[in-house]
Image (cartoon, rainbow, N blue to C red; front, side):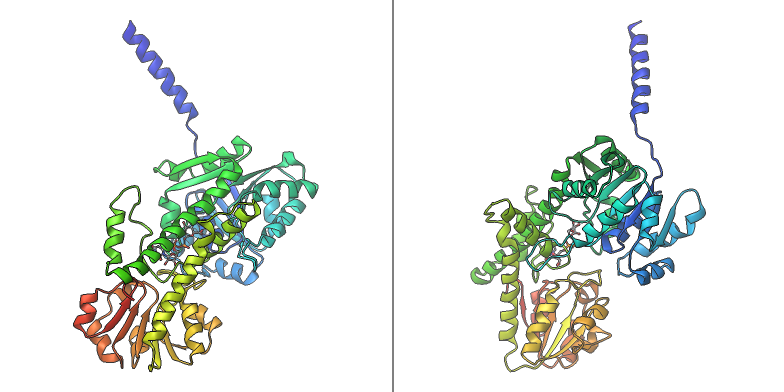
Length: 462
Ligand code: UGA
């Protein structure tokens, strides 16, 4: 008898649990902004089954996207885009591109804001694009929407956005604001979207948060973790995460400078530290200082937020500064190595490998420094040349690494592209005029460089 009662309870509770399990629902979503974040988010959400329209005011960009031309180099993104667009009429997936923001706000239930929040001159996040988007939303809300903040915004922005909409006359019952920051890395954004560590959702209204969570059900069912919290905690999780990652990099770079002085090997120190699970071995690679569109701007913005809240945050206010100082140490070393030498070959222009993004790349500081000293610069990058050309038209851009190295007096490795890691040092030694390498990514083994009679400097051995 007891056994039957047990089985019946089990059956009932499993039925109850099954009823509780959320089921995937295809949602109609408009993603505003087709920059790096908006595009990966839009294409990713379409890939997992939603009905997506990506909108942007940039008509040329949208026209290109309609023809499957992606404005950024991001491995794997096109492979996701094409099937999502093709299956537009199929019941499973859909992805469209459009410039008509007003119409798309009206036509979709969920509005993702993914516009840029660049660094202002004062170091704050510039929220003008967010304000403009809120204006558009206010003018076009007639039915209930969830407004989901994907852009990286300082803590308090979502609450402020809600007040802004109300002030503009929008009925608060017509919308819920949800924060859903992104944690994608350029170069591995597709992988990070599909198999990232976590999804963070901040909300005031729990059911709106749940609805955003359920968008990601295929990923969650595949093991991705999620956390639902309040708006502010979610916004701050983004900045705190970028802050700690940038701190790890700035820290290992400072340790590398100490290694220079005390004959320690920074690679071994980093490996040894990383063996402690509490520290972990990720983001401890010494390099030319962090760059990119996120760490510099987000560490500065976090510093500004601390100040605004009357906090004298010792760690946060030195992350960016430490990074700038580190870059200067490398530039000083390069300048010393360059005495009586004229020709510099720069290998790598982007802020990291597998992207065409040059924002805050060490290559920018390096070219500025070399141009001031009237050095001849030849540069090669597999993807970043076109972007760098716009900033520095007077550099000689090469179509191969060999071409850049030819007759060089000094080779500077800026980016850790795979094709540089496999550089044939024998050919390299034959091509250049003076055998001298500054390896800011520590991609070469010092013994190998010595074997080919190179004078070399790397991070930790300047
Ligand atoms: C960073 C974060 O890693 C993402 O989680 C976040 O979503 C993103 O910012 C963002 O806020 O949008 P990203 O800037 O694309 O991603 O690239 P990272 O791989 O983090 O590299 C940033 C910089 O740090 C690069 O210059 C890279 O070369 C440098 N770095 C990274 C190091 O010098 N050493 C390391 O060990 C790791």
